[in-house]
Image (tube, rainbow, N blue to C red; front, side):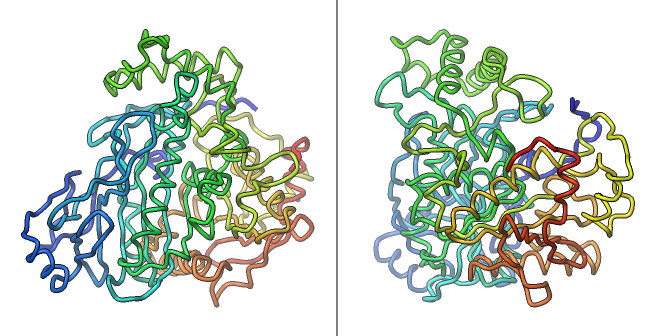
Length: 530
């Protein structure tokens, strides 16, 4: 089915949105929005006194840090967890600082790029290759408590987005669940995934330094989160869209093993991004095309360190299209050829794809997984060929979603996200390791990203939305605490198996169903094997 992107129907959803810098209130109650960090100089004796006396000062491995506090929640923005001193190489440890570092403003985000099939322009304001910083919301610091830690990985594929978006503010979720929320900035697009491994040992890991940044953030959490009231032995990764695919990548990499205990994937997989990632062949060809566009050869490879971000992104965009057409790589929308930025299965950092022909990634075997998608996802964003209604199709729609009386096949996501998610669930269940729990979010216009305000407990348009946000956020919190999602008000959430097909329908009245859309999927995607 050929799809065409319709700009007029594009929503400003968080998965692909521009960054909205709106942070925690500082001590005067005003909002801070500049990506800057202030360091106050003090003597050694003053530092020790501040550490003991000042509320909200926390000692990290690199130095003392001061946050803000609002409605009982401490907030720390732009906290550095590593430093990228050069492009395309792993980041280094943070340089220690003197005095107290004030963390009341968001830090820089990665330079931005476009995703194939999505119109728009990328601003590089507030961006930097040295974007290794994170944000923390916590109910208590220096209190000896060990709260579950939930680490958010933002959407936008592997090309765009940041942890600084207003919709990712963790204050409400931290407050309602007595958990520590962390959101992570890391390198994206050409800065995070350009494979220069053929051009010298210096660039051995260049194809995956964006993911290595995330690993560095998890190592920082292991070393520091106790001072922020968190438990380093109970860390849950959660993310939506590209952020969900990053969770899957972390479940695949042995470099991340032991750094987190649970994973949540929200609409985080397509057949070519999440189920699988880029191959070494594709990434090598892409690098060759980009270097050619920049007139850089193996003899002057270090010149790439000095190309402007705009020129680098322009050459990369051209290279993605060139390589996609050259190797006939379909875009995620399936209506043209182009590559997108993704991690690279290099046999080392990523030994395999998240899903192989017969199994789920070995590194993720013992990690419980909560995973699902939304009923509508990208339907409505693209023009598509109409699906001819038949009695069989009408009956299958009613069987799958009996409460959605106006639902038509064009409104149901099947092949783009739902089926790849099912493939991941089935292979994870087949592994006979930690359980996997499935869901479909069906409330209202359940487009791509629509569940995010409910997960972060932000939805408050009416009592029904408030109650649903309370239920979904608490289900996520309970999963982070115990490895089992759900609330007392929901039906018992059973693990997914191929035979049982247990799936929680998340709606105003959530319900557990079993293989609810099996017949519908057979009609709409009869050749798909999962």
